[in-house]
Length: 197
Ligand code: GAR
Image (cartoon, rainbow, N blue to C red; front, top):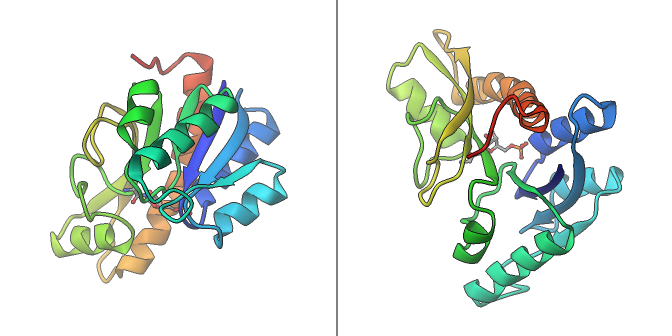
């Protein structure tokens, strides 16, 4: 199973998956990172891991359709089987969506369907969780559908919310769980324990 990562910032989830592949407990081969932002830790991490990187964004391809085409071409040329969204903050174009139907996984830092949707990313998610007075939050790995943070849920992990938590503290606690949940989900997909439609 060849993996194609799309990331925008830190790439810590991608790193957790790269480590799992390297250690051999995820039977998958990372094949490419596509990043919309050249100056990110995600790019540095990929370079350190000898993972080919392509920078594709609105500057390299001002026309959204040509950007979608370029992303699809890069993934197809790398012969990837599964797109792994790892903190990718852009919408996937319709060509890529159609070519990889039911083959795009995403991680979101809440217990979807709660606290998902447009504008719900980063600290905003954790602020909203605290404002709602939740006593539990978590992370969700899901297939992507046509809307933001939608599509069949593959696995979730819960994380407690403690009195006095700040959004930053909650973000770190959830991210720590993400680093276990995402590699575990991919290992199960590779072993056929989680079947994609
Ligand atoms: C993660 O917390 C991920 O769940 C979130 O972005 C962060 C990326 O961290 N994704 C979303 O909010 C998607 N809606 P990373 O770049 O260090 O993996």
